[in-house]
Image (cartoon, rainbow, N blue to C red):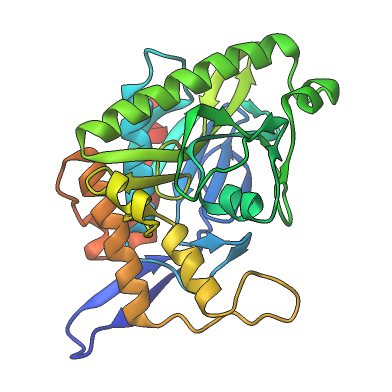
Length: 329
């Protein structure tokens, strides 16, 4: 299903893919996440469709953001390719601008949040007096958007419903979510992946502020899975002006989903009981779309190709994926 918004003169249509219902050969099941729809092919492959849905505060917003899925999928694919020397990952191919096909792995029920700067939810907690996140102690006297001496890892447990919960390294191992042996490997990979992301961002005039990684296992082997370094899973600041803005206590120019969260906060919504989702206008959705495209072009150094501009998005995806799967046989 796609939504169409007409421009003020009725000449332009912006499409957003918000729902999928594909039936691929060998399909065993489908999982509809907050943003991605994940199709299980013969318990062997995963077809991951990055839709144009957008979530914030653990709720999916009522309208889609044109081109968002393509931005997420293509950025993730580029980073998976450019970090495959650090660790193996699940990706096999991107048969469509909004789709990645890869190996089906058993994912660990934990996300590896890695932070280089005190901001976002960590800053909100710090401001309220919190001095320890996920077993990582934080010094007194830090200010918003201040760099940590070195990046910190603050894992969360993955929740199917509701909020993800912070958890420490010790609890993850104690609860048997990840073995101590596997944890040591993925912690090493996490630090190396984040360092690579910082290097790539710096070349583009950006700072990789924080991000999340997910890992899984297949036939006893560890893999990096899901997305990486996208504006949904990561936060970027512009390097130019960072120090000056920090010294003055001014908000940083950033490329991330935080501006959507901040807009919702400003409109009285944090998904608390009794709060009502504000209306999301065509103009606002377009502005969010523009920000996602801006990030794509900044982080990749390439012009964004609006592949989804014409035709039926779902039909195109179905055709491309079916052709890819047929050619694998």
